[in-house]
Amino acid sequence: MRKILVVIGVFFLAAYFGAFDVMAQEAEAAADTGRFQVLKEKFIEGDWKFMSLVLICLILGLAFCIERIITLNLATTNTDKLMSRIDERLADGDLEGAKEVCKSTPGPTATVLYEGLRNAGGGPEAVEKAIVSYGSVQMGQLEKGLVWISLFIAIAPMLGFMGTVIGMIQAFDTIEVVGDISPSVVAGGIKVALLTTVFGLIVAIILQIFYNYIVSKIDGIVNGMEDSSIALVDVMSRNNVFK
Image (tube, rainbow, N blue to C red):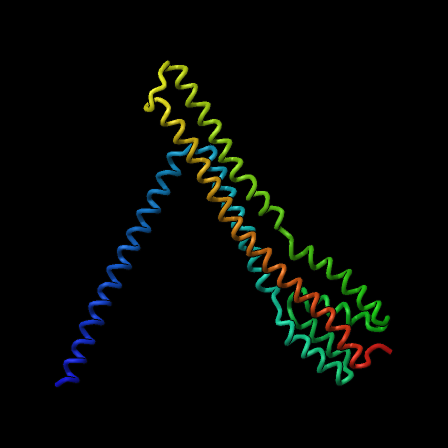
């Protein structure tokens, strides 16, 4: 009997908390809908000329961010596993096999290591020179598009501030025409001015977060590339690749 009561109690508790979770999810969805509706209304209330420019900055900036994130995720390589496979090939005296490992591995790290292996006949100095030279090329490829993201981060709040200034000018024009400085006369122009600033800052904040994430990903790839390049010379020396 006690077991049955425990089971029934657990059942009702689960049903209660399940219903509570459903209600919480519905309330959260309604709140999200309400927030989106408010955001939409505020966007419409702002000056469409500057708000549209800010929106274009957001769309283009996010496009560059998404492209960079996808590219960098594809460029990320497990350097420890790659170096282990290269070491195994070189330990067997198979330099061409080590090159094939690099060629079959996607990412800039494998490409740089392949250039180092390709110049093994020139000694450690030639390997290091090839790694440094081609590493600079790969760095440029990784940072491609960052300048555009930085541009949109800078332009978005500037457009917002420009909309603010123009909105204030319109408010003062209204005061001059009406000859009255009552709040009802100037509230519309000031509201438009503040909305453009808010949306410009929101766009800049969003893009800045993505920009910092992308920079951190690039730093991680570059650090792995540098560590692997140093390790490659040691592996080649240990396996008597240099004659």
